[in-house]
Amino acid sequence: MSAEETLSEDERRALELVRETGGLHQSELWKELDVSSRKGSRIAESLQEAGLVQREEAVYQGHNTYFLMPRARDLEFSLLMAGDMLSPFIGEEEIDPTSDAFSQWLMNLAYEEY
Amino acid sequence: MAFEELLSDPVIQKYLHELVGPTGMPVAAAPPDGEVTDEELAEELGLELNDVRRALFILYENDLASYRRVRDEDSGWLTYLWTFEYENIPENLEEEMYRLLDALEERLEYERTHEFYLSEPAGLRFEFSEAMEFDFQCPETGAPLEPMENDDLVDAAEERIEELRDELNVDVTR
Image (cartoon, rainbow over all chains, first blue to last red; front, side, top):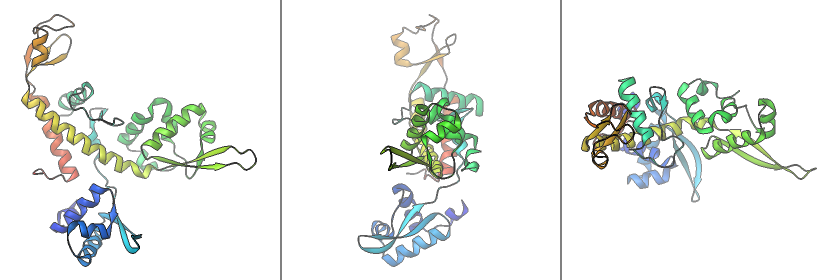
């Protein structure tokens, strides 16, 4: 977490972009961020050094570049739980915030956890 | 068995159980190293081939398994060779955390802007317009519907939203 707190504004935007897209080429990254390719390269390098993205050599539109992927984070998955009930949206295409299943989940949260 | 560390997490076990159900759980809970056929799994686990296939396809739909087809040169039959891809579990659960956060934010807004009535004996909650339709009488027990505070739900939703935003580094001012 601390690695993320010390990011520059550009690095933070780049990381967000990598996470939102689920992965993109470095050449797309700097164009999207509207910075120079050199700067884009420095940003990608520092994110890789901070362990926040994975970087692999790739060829894109005939040019050598890198493919950047979000590093799967070790998150607190228990935040999906309310008591012993898992988020009711898992395995569901649509999210219905007023569904009975979600009401039950929220009740569990209110009366069992907090 | 592969992915032992991931599978030791009770939330991940629960997640797999939610996806494949109790009959598919033996398949989901013991991913072998490398490639395996559905027949091998069925034999090893003592399960019906159909149950094994069903579980494998659910895992496939969730990016947690992949297959390649190989034609047996003698018989001409197609064999499916399956690989478990549980390295994608953290990413899937991260996505679920974002979905849950969205739902909680919408739900919080709904809880704050509506009034609720309770049928104590039935343990059912009705939104104001529903309660009015039922003439403030529980449709199941006939008991009068009483106004109900939802502060506890609002507080719980707020607290979990805060925790999820913190964990996912979501900017509050977005």
